[in-house]
Amino acid sequence: MRFLPYGVAIWLFMVGLYGIVTSRNLVHQIISLSVVQASTYVLLMTVGFRTGAAAPVFADIPTSRAAVDPVVQALSLTDVVVGATVSALLLAIAVQIHKKTGTLDPEDLRGAPDL
Amino acid sequence: MTPLQVTILVLVGVGGTCVVFTRDPLRQAMVASLFGILLAIMFFVLQAPDVALSEIVVGAVALPLMILLSLAKIRGGER
Amino acid sequence: MTSRVRKVVFLVAGGMLALLLVWGLAGLPHFGAAHAVDGTMLNQVSVRERHITDVVTAVNFDYRGFDTVGEEFIFFAAVLGVALLLRPQSGEGSGHHNDFATGRAVPPTSDALRVLGLGLTPPTVLFAFYIVAHGHLTPGGGFQGGVILATGVLLIYLAGELDDLHGLYTERALERSEAIGAGGFVAVGLLGVAAGSAFLENVLPLGQLGSVFSAGMVPLINLCVGLEIAAGLVLLMTTFLHQTIVLRRLVRTRRTTTDASP
Image (spheres, rainbow over the protein chains, first blue to last red):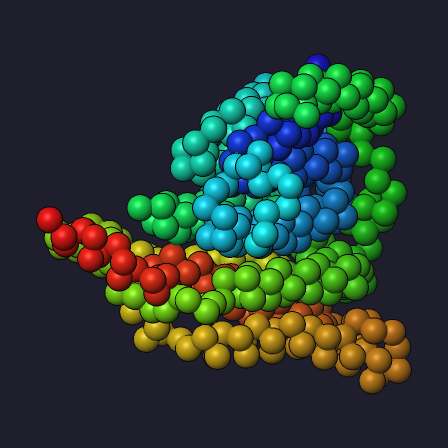
């Protein structure tokens, strides 16, 4: 049971990768990529957690109270917003590919079609 | 580990699997939105309110919006 | 390589990777025993040192502010990339919204949606400003508040039409706001250099713990980041909306004449 959070992170990573490798649709691939990103958030949160501790916001609790690690939260926080924006960039590329070649299937796009 | 933590972690794992195995992108956008909310609840349970705030708005609103708009553009051109 | 072969290769290689990950992660301290030396120390000193109560914001904008500058410019570059990719190209022009619904009227927005949008937009915008302004006191900050502000603008589009958005802002004003936000972060950081210390060093007066004007430069940076993220996301949305609803290929006359012929 202690390994469950790490197990969930590894499982999400593998499932997301499987989705990317066996996908027949570019938009499906991009959303599977966001699942892989979610696995890194799970891992970071797990590493920073401390049993019985509070959130690292000391507005109403004394500083002597134990709190979870704020550094990994800072990393995940910016990553969530920036990751979604990069996914938007990938979606724009997918839209342009569909406009130029008429297909969204990675199988049909092999062999460098003239874009 | 408390039962709440175990439950939400298992739900996140199941949610991620559902997102990948939904092949139609339109349905997958809705499942991804639900997965975003599950992730936000998990961040909340693991005592990370800042990250949960970000994830709620981004994962449930901004990302599915852009997926839906891309799909609308792609399907609109196919007709 | 056919897709079946690819699947088999992935299952073999993925299985080995998973085993490696399990072996690696089993060596970490077990769940709940955070070995974080930096984090524990930051929790104990940052309230006293910086007069700030939200330690995550302190880490993001004060202790590790340089990384946040980098992340913000990744965001800027991604929005720039989308605006570049989805620009109107030769052979595309503005079409009417009802192009594909020839022969039937486009249904108007339902009343429930309009009332809900009207009712929810002011609290959402107010909440966004609150989150940005109080980022150093309670959970929040520039990133979260900026995204919530963009959601408020999205509510206006959902309750109305695309033309309502055009009456709200011009694309030029959005681009300028985003640039001011991104450049403002760097400019505030240069205040530290001007005062004789390092870039992004917290040199403004620290104020009283718990008031909105505390923690030196952090509220200023929060405002700049909130402006940039909000403007960037609204620009992103507008680009996608413009691409989906307005832009059409200009060679559509061929199709309509074949539809009209008996």
